[in-house]
Length: 343
Image 1 (cartoon, rainbow, N blue to C red):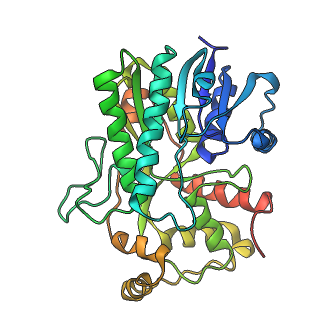
Image 2 (tube, rainbow, N blue to C red):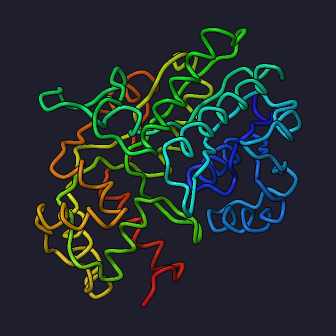
């Protein structure tokens, strides 16, 4: 039924805002949570950049994943929930427990509220990080939805939090869901049009390249456009076939960072003149990773095959993502158009 309310958690998030655009375009009313209502103007401005001015068809509720406050109001009267909000520790909070506990508790808090309010289905925004990391050499490729990240391997706290919080969500549904349905969407590296200064970590890679980052790491990943991620959320929300299923959101074959750099140089000419097509030697990255926290997280991914398949979503839900190259080009175009690059 169109015109009903759908809750999208974490309304300042990049994927969440594209989900809101997709829902509004499909005729739904959208309610979203923000930690502070002071950010309503910013969210509305980003949606306007994306072509939507929903007025009263968009509502806001203040709610934080770390507290029960506000969640009953957020889910009240909603037929569906798209839950993508996830706590992101900052500053000195780099211990695993700063990531894992809040992520698990946050998911359970939203699921409990949705169940108690009579919501039909929750679509959880999980991640490739819950599927394809930590695996021993010899594990088959491409990864698919039957895979779970191997937490006995070298897994970063963020990826561990995504794995454990998704597992906890499925366990909750099985044990005490009381008829609440769940589907998960697990995106790979998310590209596509930025709507403002808050965009995905993957688009940060594009901006770093365009701003003259010195060289590329020997890392590959699959890619997907955020508009297709939003479309998959919508399909997973309403299609009966999505009940109880996980869906990898990915388009085409994995790309190496050097291939992304070469694509930007080819498509953007002068605007991409600072993009380096040098590859950093792995050993150099490993040494730098001993003192650089950011590079330390990359070391386990050097030369690690991240191939993943989106066949299930295409077959079961009729999902048809655009080519990965189009997603990367759309990222760069939006960064240039919105003036988001540092000179």
